[in-house]
Length: 216
Image (cartoon, one colour):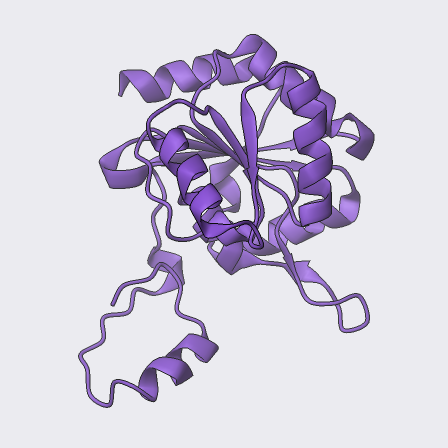
């Protein structure tokens, strides 16, 4: 059994099934994601969809996964991008399994360029051609009444959808508020990766970054 993360809830569940097993654990401070270039970009919330459109206005559409924090906004973003004639689909948990599998297969084969989804696709999808992962929202965990914080586990799984099988990848996180920057810094500090996530100057910079990835 292998996983990039190993939370206590999973440990407890596995212990009910597997009584004796060898374990190899890598300390989080030794985690290396050098094959994934990480960037962040501050953008007003209402202008985020326009930023996404600008990204695909300056870059040739490549296999991309866009993660949002709620199904409701995934649908909103899907409609905005579809009306802009962008080749996108939306995938969420309550879809018919057959329909979801068909969309993922079209994504694997390049018939679909961009998937908009929630954390449900943060695990278990391996498409080597994915070059960009965009966190439209900083992944969060917790409830308002109990305190919200950056979700380090889902961040790692999300950006891990690119850079598969020895390839290079690009991960971009968009945020709009000071508190969202704080949540992102919580995540980066968790993995000692703050110095590895650089600010993006704008969509045009992605042209050069994608060129670097493709030429490695």
